[in-house]
Amino acid sequence: MSTNTEQVYEEVAKERTGLSDILRRFFDSDLWFSFCHSPVAIVSMVVSIVIVLSAVFAPWIAPTNPFDLAQIDLLDSEIPPVWLADGDPRFLLGTDDQGRDIFSTILYGSRISLLVGFASVVFAMAIGIPLGLISGYYGGHVDSVIMRIADVQLSFPAILIAFLIDGVARGILPREVHDEMALYVLVFAIGISGWVQYARTVRGSTMVEKNKEYVQAARVIGIRRGTILVRHILPNVLGPVLVIATIHLALAIITEATLSFLGVGVPVTSPSLGTLIRVGYDFLFSGVWWITIMPGVALIILVLAINLVGDWLRDALNPKLR
Image (cartoon, rainbow, N blue to C red; front, side):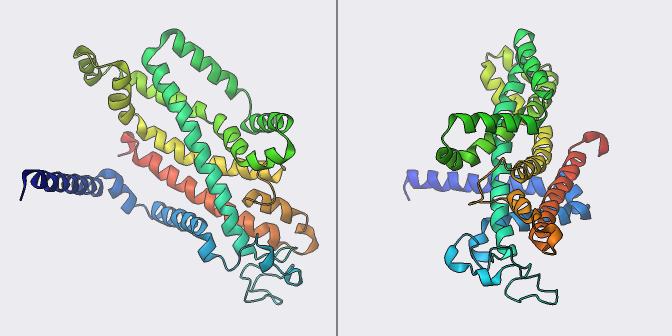
């Protein structure tokens, strides 16, 4: 066996050993112990994973594609859920006014809601974390400018900021282009209104970490500030960020649903849970309650599960509660 081949095998063995060590340390950690001894966290995590996987694999799980006109029959409109007297076994949660299967529309609508939620959180983190690191590490005028901008933004509700951004986009972009860009505008509007929480949290943690001995030692040996921020300080401030991100995900989904319900969201051709609730609201008092109630219940379950996971994660990462 050649020397190069032996080196390759050694590197692969090291990678496997490193991965196994990481997994072993995780399963031996207080975080995993806390998770295993929290029934609420386990159930919430399972529900969240099931909903996310159901949304991702909606084309294979959903009985029909609610946006394929060839699979929709108007004669099947307003059929109640299967457990009611006039229910049809083909439609578990009933159908809407267009004959679309409610269960299928919820699965497809959850994809949009989750996509907007995750993308908004990532966008907010991409802005807030670097600004928080810079503000907390450098201090002085840089810190003052960033924090004053954050204070100004906190004086405006997130919904109002999203309305403002959407209004500007509608005024600048043609209607056809706006419909195509509606998802990106929504992600930008929700994400830009949430970066302040990340920046403030990371700033506070950075101000504590930068005075510790390991950071001072890195300065003494001549490591650049950018390297110190990314390699040394950032990994030690991610705990609170994960908690905020989990809770912010639920808030972003709620914000998207609110905006879509008010008509400022994704177009009807690719509706989210909020759009489905708005469409069904017109039929709420006409006896066809399931059109809006079923997507509403799905939204509540999704947000509640994510919030409970966030609450557990907040307590598990709090050293004072260990």
